[in-house]
Length: 574
Image 1 (cartoon, one colour):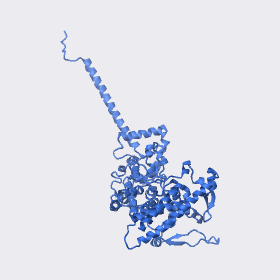
Image 2 (cartoon, helix red, strand yellow):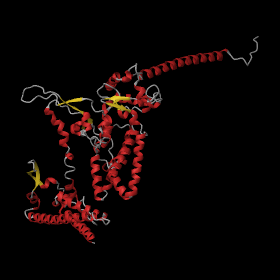
Image 3 (cartoon, one colour):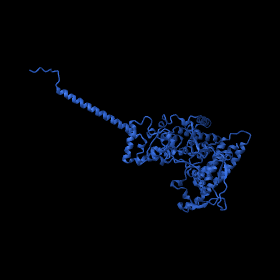
Image 4 (cartoon, one colour):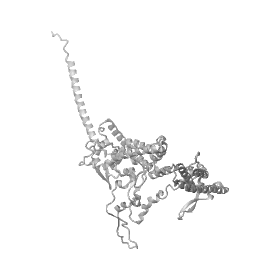
């Protein structure tokens, strides 16, 4: 008889099943652990391998970058080797999902064939350069570094709160307050409109000087010109505060260095819109004059066809500086290019008109904002927008190479002719003079799109015998017919007669006003001087520009001049 079975005791079959599942789970756990270990090793290995510069250099499009890094101080183990990921990832970014996604997108571009569409945009952030163990100790701020023939100082350029710059800012504020108090808000606004215009400094000075003369404010000329220069100095200092390490230190296409100082950046900042050897373009701001005698005229042969080399002639820069000889006498060829920005440069990135709305009316406030958005926030480099400026001497291998030496002066009409045709253009457009209660009107021929070449068709000669194009009556008849000759003669006579009348009255009033100013009794002659200056400008504009360029406007100007002069004469009679 079998013993009774305990219902609480499990049968052997379920026990064997549970043991089997336990063994399976154990095996799966071991396999999973092994896989995790292997995966971890693969990930760590891949992370290590892909962070090596050799991996970056394995793509053919990276050859020049890898080669230049290999030649650079950053690859030197003695100097503290910096890998690609140390610079091109910000601190703490290398192991993030964002970094991995960027890497995958670059790999996708490479394998999809899109990688050759343009150069890689590899931005290096300041905190990568300034991390611990690299340049974070700011030791570079206290050193001068050789940059060609110049000793460069980071502190001088990056310390925008320095004592000298603070003094300039204080000077600007004080000068503005002074001009506001003495000239008033309306006149200061007019000065600001010219002073903040983006143009060459010499052109801006001429416009301010002309405006001050028209307003009889020439006594304030020195203060106003200094005020304008301080405004532009403030903008340049503000741009310095937005500089990044990569603004000046860039990839060197010569492959000698991977990350080097780009001297073209120096040239753009120092020379754009600056007069020669003034303000930020002052030679001695950066250069020490050569010490001792410097050979000149060397390499040239003695006369007479002897073939013998003439004895070297030397000069001493110390003597030149002592005698205040301008550097432009010998070195005008040093600066090549003007750093211009064109609409086409902007359209390389911006294809919508709203981005160019302010382009044709640039002033310092707009330029300040452009630099903040593009240079400070978007890593734009000077060369992305500006035409390159170069700074070098023209080599003089022989006397014939002097052609290149003289080219900058020959091309600079302003050297002799300050906006030579400005008066003609002003008269044509009905501007530049003053007519009370009326606005000037452009020559009606501009409405038919006629330009200078329509009338100036015949070869003539200037006093030196050089060929110039002159205007002729025949050119007028070609469009207006033969009857136009008689009308032309009447216009010519009317303008000339009125001009002679205004000139005679101007000379008379100038003499009388000068005599009145020399009298011992005190008279308020400011209004008379203002009217005289206005009349003189109107007469000079018509005489210089030839009134026939805009007969109607010329007669309006002369009529206004005669009225102003008669008013002065009447006041002097009282």
